[in-house]
Length: 44
Image 1 (cartoon, helix red, strand yellow):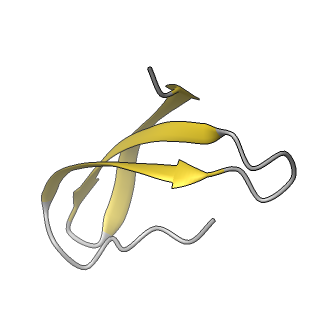
Image 2: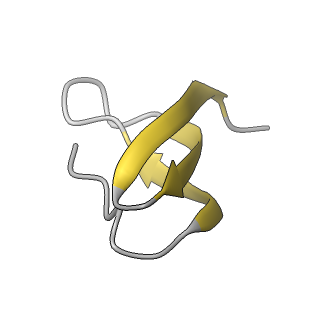
């Protein structure tokens, strides 16, 4: 999974798992092109 940290702020999206193809909800925050938080879980 690649994360784009070029824009500051919170990003949230749903991506299919590369292994089992189940949807995963991804949420992360970037600041100054650095990852400051990351959370993932099943998408409902």
